Image 1 (cartoon, helix red, strand yellow):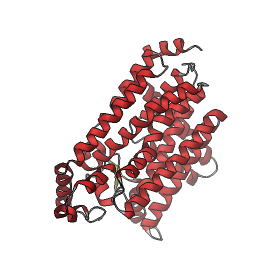
Image 2 (cartoon, rainbow, N blue to C red):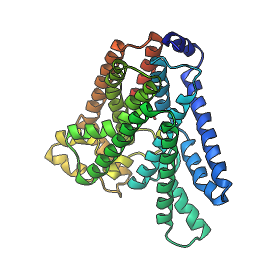
Image 3 (cartoon, rainbow, N blue to C red):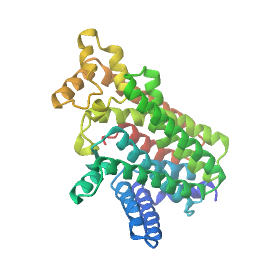
Image 4 (cartoon, rainbow, N blue to C red):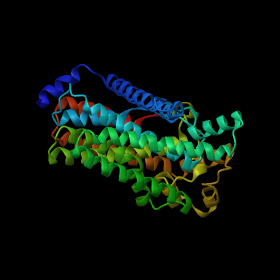
Length: 357
């Protein structure tokens, strides 16, 4: 179908409608998976139900939206449903990343409820099962994350080799970003340029650029469109992660679903921390040295937050976000996409860069 027909389809569904369609498709995929395994043994249904709990507990569904508009921009048939499998795969990969991330970081909460490994730890204790509750919770959470990865892989690869090639890059980039995140947390504050690499690969690439590429590949996009999506998606993906870093320290726990200051206790190698390390004088260096201590109390977090504001690190990150948002919009203005899709992508860019949760 020609791009004009794809654009006409934008007149009906809103972003919210598309996100709800993805949600329904995810639920159907997971129900099928649960029923398939429950038919063999009822216990096999349990990890799928845990995955469903994690995946459908919330989320912005921005990644599927970028995938959808990448597909339409490349002339994809708006009535074609294969893009939903790709979108569901992206969200399941996101679940995989969050489940493993929570175990690696020892996070207590996710999306306003106990992180899965904590939930399972408590389940083990209440039931009086044998063995160590913590190891049970962490072990099962890792396995549920692996199940999410396997389900995502099967969904996306079924859509063809072109999509599979992008998918391979996305998965590897995600692992490399996670590695930098874990290693950076134990080695202390990173230089700003390396901290930006964490932002790019841990979350940025698989939030914006690669979902656009996946949708475009599904519709058979040419090189010009793929390169235009990179020029738009890379800076916007970085802006998304930089906003995430700010929310991890300054966000409202009621909105983010996570305790305030968790990134400071974990010693996350963020650009915010890298900039503060460059700017803070010797008289306040002892405060930054406390970053990474899991026993930071509310007073410690408040003092660190004040330091990040006073030294200008917070404002500097806000400026980086604004710069990258402008860079992304300039690239979008030059991209060979229909105006209706450009408008949708512009709106999504604002949500990614300026969100409060």
